[in-house]
Amino acid sequence: MPPSRRSSPAGGGGRRWDASGVGHVLFPRGVLALQRVDGALLFAVRAALAMALAGLPVVLAGRPDLAVYGMLGAFTTTFGRNLPYRRRAWALAWVALAMTACVGVGSALASVARPWSSVAGAAVVVAATALVAGVSKYVCDATGLGGLGAILLLFSFAVAANATTTPGQVLPRTGMAALGSLLAWALALLGRLIHPDRPQRLSVAAALRRLAELLDSARGGVGRSRHQATAAVLQAYDCLGLAPPTTSKRPGEDNTCVRLTDLSWSLLIDSTRGTPEDPPELARLLRTQAGMLADRHQRYPQVLADLAAYSSLPPEPGRRFSPRAPVPDDPGARRAWVLVRGRPGGRKPVSVLLVPALRMVLGTLVAGGAALALGLGHGYWAAISAAAVLHSVNVRTTVQRAVQRTLGTALGLMIALGVLAGHPAPVLLALVIVALEFLMEYMVVRNYGLGVVFLTPLALLLSDLADPESPEELIVDRGLGSLLGIVIGLVCALLVVHDRAAVRVERALAQCTEATERAERALVLRSRPPHPVVPVHLAVSVVELREADDAAAGELLSAGIDPAALAAAEQRAYLLLARLLHH
Image (cartoon, rainbow, N blue to C red; front, side, top):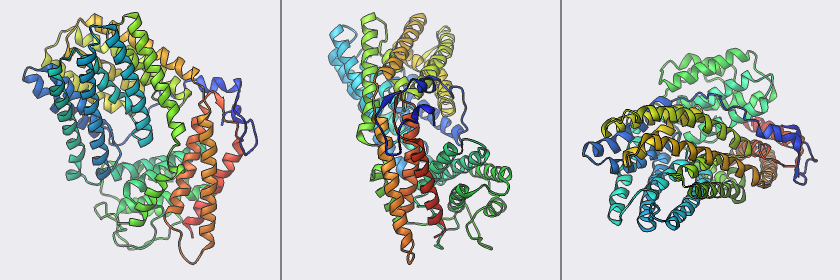
């Protein structure tokens, strides 16, 4: 933890400024870091296919202006990347409704306010854009929909609200958005017929890779790596619909993903009491098994046996494991996850969610208003750029986003200029948009800045497809609008100083303490195993404690909590998880 946090005893203290931590917050570390993400290729192909099906037929029919709204609806496929199919179906259904509503409400507002013909109408649209930005940010944070999330919803609304629209065009544009959303929803669920266990396999593979990183970081940074590994293993259990650990003998427990998740949990918890005999070899085995899961490789048994040798779980000689075996049905585990998600340790307090949303509202409102005052064409691009910068966790990640957005936009504008300079026909333009959608979805999960390189020309070409303009004017408007929005978004993050992140740390510490006490009481009753909610609540609480502390460390206002108290609570929780594992 940064030195600036060491300001008060264990119980917490007053908020205070500490200039020694400003450099830590404002230095944009990790801007160029690349992440490895399993399954990114297939996901990008699916997103591009949704875009093509929603837009190309309409372009071929001679209505490129309508095709844009179908393509906006196709952005629905971006959400719910890691959710199992049943939960993905519900999540994307709500996203599809939200995406359609953004286009419908935006088009209706444009037909009434007529922002292209009056300053008052443009001001109304700027205010509405800021409101949509704040609501989208709040809902995406509250529901855990990551990625570009709120930005795509805001983009859909802004494009519709700033287009030249008559009352008779509102319904067709809304219908096209609904059709694009429906196609994206269907494609996102089509995989259930081909590879029904893909989300579970990728989730378990991610947990194995995080464990390998934990073993690699044995000489430093263990706390952060252990937190990431714990969150990944919990995500794997949640995706399987089970609670840790599932070591009792039940029908269907021979599912490979279940067994690997239990092994991961055992290795993770045992790592708190010492390193394994051969960490490099174990990390290699974990990555090998992760690769097999991600690639649907069938050679599981030997690697499973080798991993089990490092685990404290009892051996199971002669027991067969198959990736096609059914996952055991565990109603108790499902109830445990529902209960934990409803606890303060499993969700962020409303006050913590409100401040980033208010930052988003303020940034987009000021950026859009400034663009309007300066007479910039396509002024909503300034608002979207400000929102993109503010679509972050804290000031530190806002600075990172600002740098990534600046570099990515500069490169993206060069790509857009090269494409638009050739004055491509609408069909060719639509094909380029589909290709850019593929590249954007493939790269943005690895590095946000690389995603912006392709997102920038994608947005420009969508605008040109809907209403062709001079390439030079589009490029200049986008460049100036983006620069204005990035600067305003960054200034807004620096000026809106708050202590909500510190409050979140205090609540997380209290919830972790409560969870450890609950676990200790459960261990006293040795006559029966603890309820599944006990380890789930404890593990979720310790993950939230670390996330809350990291978020507070990225703000300019010190939380005023002794790091020793947080470290002691975290260590106590992991030791109790080890006792629960071997109970």
